[in-house]
Length: 277
Image 1 (cartoon, one colour):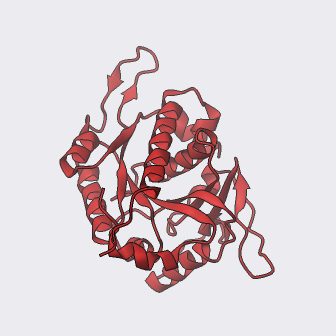
Image 2 (cartoon, helix red, strand yellow):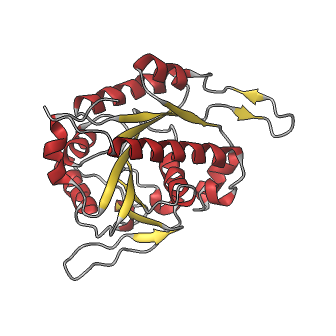
Image 3 (cartoon, helix red, strand yellow):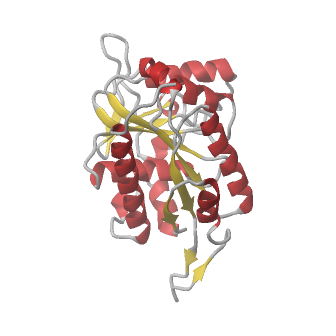
């Protein structure tokens, strides 16, 4: 894990009030299950690790948190004009999807997106949180860089499938966070395999072990494998995260293990001496 070095002394001024740790859930490309992982990780951190958790949908162009967390209302505003996050399943949530029509296209340029994200971070009364889980937009563009530079991020978790194309983009994501001195918490391999519901035979649809190999190659922690299951998609569509809908499933246990590793790494990081250069 890279030291935050000189960046952290500046980033202290950019911390979100009341939030101990902010982590980015990121991917180099879309379609790898980043948002699904962000939602289930947030719930697992709250339920399994007994932490106060918030969930920020920073995927402005494709907000999916309202659907996945079954939220259909708009946030209220405090007397000092801060939005109050909407809570469900014990998670405080904020998304641009709460503020626009469900089917309305979001055709904003960079400055408008940055302004919206600013309001959804510091313009929200998050209260006291142990962890704010931030579902980042896919890719490594201006928005991702701006968010990484303008917020004090405790770390980034990279989600990828075992597929070579996804892993190539995941490496780009790691290198982007390295450039802005955000520590990488580790890599999660989503859709690692599919087990036949009749015979139990595993099928490695997107390849086998690719994310584990990439983590080893880049000197990063491999946080776990999340298998591909129909129930995960069904739970997401119904707005009931799989870790709640089927807490004893293989997928739920896998998310629980990832949550424990993330919580442990953040705790260890908090007690590490800070190096300022």
